[in-house]
Length: 482
Ligand SMILES: [Zn+2]
Image (tube, rainbow, N blue to C red; front, top):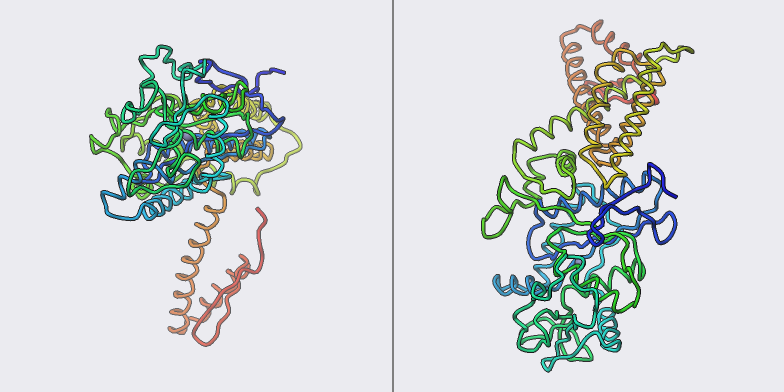
């Protein structure tokens, strides 16, 4: 059944927008390629993590139960190389950068349901490779490495739009033993000094691509709904994942929608090691609050390039602060808002306007997760809150605006209401410290009438002061329900 609100997402394979029709009703299974933990998580990774987290939030808001799995590649050439360069154990490298990655996710409010690690799944990976050999899609080289024979799979290159074989070449270091330059490793025989696992083909370790085919289907099944990652993963990583999985399961399609997030630029340059302009996520999180960073990631459509500049972050930070202020304003207005048993024409018009914005918000996000458009709608809502509702707090208007802003905040993941309350608590503690100190000074100077007056007024406001000698403590005696 298709209607205006059905969720459409751009599918890299079919090269058009596709309606989300989950394999199992009401459940969306999503696998996103995670980090290889050999270096600090950078702001480019952060974009991918935030986009899929927000998408999950949106799908949740729409009533789906979303299962979000993201792998951690904890054995790989890059890890081995780094360990060798720094003369450290490879597991130490893995632990250090896994911690950095998980801390960044936590700060960004990105919640992943499961993080499978490759080294915990080597047994399943060996079984999968064995299955590919039995089905005739893979061969064992004399070194003990196992390769996928691309020519046996008839749909290679379509995901990355590389239809000619001349564009398929990869892993040139194994040219000597591969049947074709575009075959790729499923299992890499161990060289002296490298970490290894025992296998039917000798000591070695999994290639990179096979892990995602194995771990995604272990947790999400042999067909699932969304496979995501950065654009740079389309070839060869996702092309190879797809070939392996469709060959192994003998079913098509393996995933319904392939999603890819665009490139992250620093100014006008590509972010790269050679240019030395890689910005670790932890540095960005030291400078900007997580909500601002999330809003910045989402203010450009996820498929377009996003360029990091301080100006663009400052601009977004202003918007972030406006959202927080609007939210606080509504929280204060709500208990004072009046139910007048009649609304003026203008109020009715405003209520309709709010509902229109709610519709526009959903329309934008249903249409290939158009977050910049949704943020523009949020901006319109903020304007109405500050220009109209602030001076005309009718109950219907304040509750409607609150509910809509709350769902926007939920999808973008800007702040938790708890955080604002915690801010207020520390502010209250500070104000009370000043009042208690002042009252102590008044009593010291014998100005007891002023000190008593202060205590009585605070009691009326719901705060009881308790004197013990010269020291004073305080408790809240009545709670306002907000
Ligand atoms: Zn992957």
